[in-house]
Image 1 (spheres, one colour):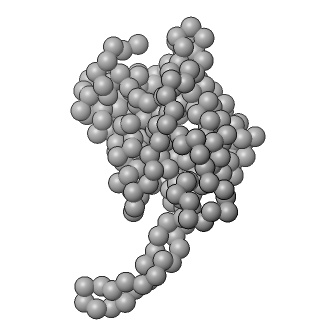
Image 2 (image 1 turned 180 degrees about the vertical axis):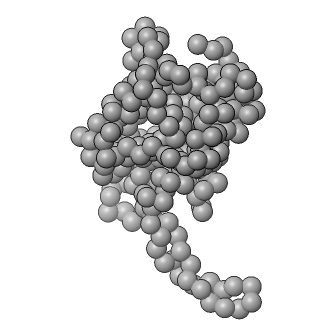
Image 3 (image 1 turned 135 degrees about the vertical axis):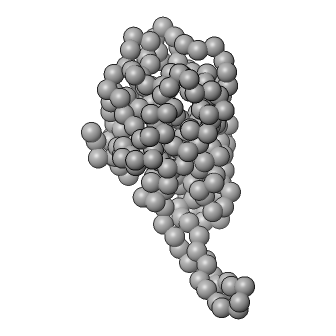
Length: 228
């Protein structure tokens, strides 16, 4: 697997991933498990992608001074609708300050399995890179629980790089080998442009584009809509 792909080996994550695969898990339990897995994968990803810098000084409750720290570079969360919404709260929990949240709506056309964009709320205006006070992100954290064929991830990565972010960091719960290879190859396979962090990887995708054994359609499971 490419060097810009990272598959978690955390024992707690692997156990929760096993629980999430079960057809007996209800929507509330699905939401909790997706949150927990996203929290673990997100922690691993952000530890690698972010740095801390000094931002001044503060004072403890008993009067001692200390150096305050903030994270850099600037980032934004970009969940892919619908299922990516189930991961947003976990990443917001990890981050020390609120960040921009943009949304991309993509679905797979059932016959061709090609991604179709139906919603995009990325700002159409970005200030120049010389504007140090800009709130616009250097890194986009792309949230999508499942990377199956990889088509949706590829389309989203392309959109974000064209928008102007310097790097896209994909955080997923589960992927297929095929999907990971396709997504990792975006940006020329350059880890400086695209990095992928995932909770687990299965080897196969079926004729409907679903991971096997996988865990079904997470969006349907989260929102109690008709399953595939």
